[in-house]
Length: 112
Image (cartoon, rainbow, N blue to C red; front, side, top):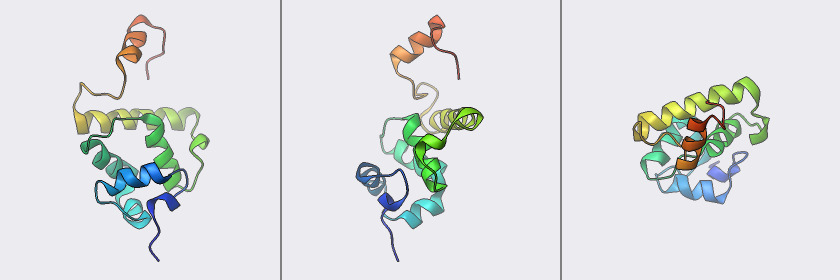
């Protein structure tokens, strides 16, 4: 039986449409690709990097709620997310907005 992408926990119609634009139309296809490769595909299609979207995808593919990601696991996923973004889009698009970069530089936010 073929299941839609939205049958995966945490993923709704908007994520389903985003994956459909890159040719991933079933939950089985996405599971086979895995979170990292699937996320690379959507980044290459022009989707703006979004950390919560990435870790919701990772958690969903594990059958876990998106807000189950915490502590060291979340920190490690952030590092992996940043790597994926830099490898896919180049070093100038690390997934941070200009305001976030400015806050980091001022020391208002702790660096990841």
